[in-house]
Image (tube, rainbow, N blue to C red):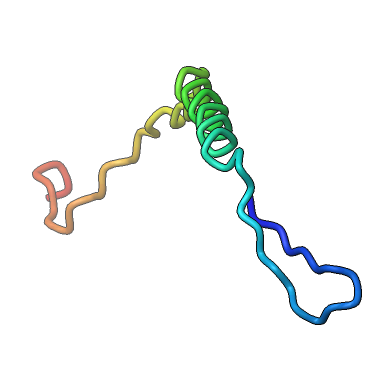
Length: 69
């Protein structure tokens, strides 16, 4: 977009803005937007399914039952 130029034998640099700046900017912008749009349409990997729930044993109550008397 911008380049630095120097005349032979001088110590001063000139920064030059290219004539095709707007054309290059919009051309590259279109390329970026096309890639961005393609990435949103690509299938996304699904998350792995969680493992099935495991049955836990019930805790025993601390009170005596009627069969233990």
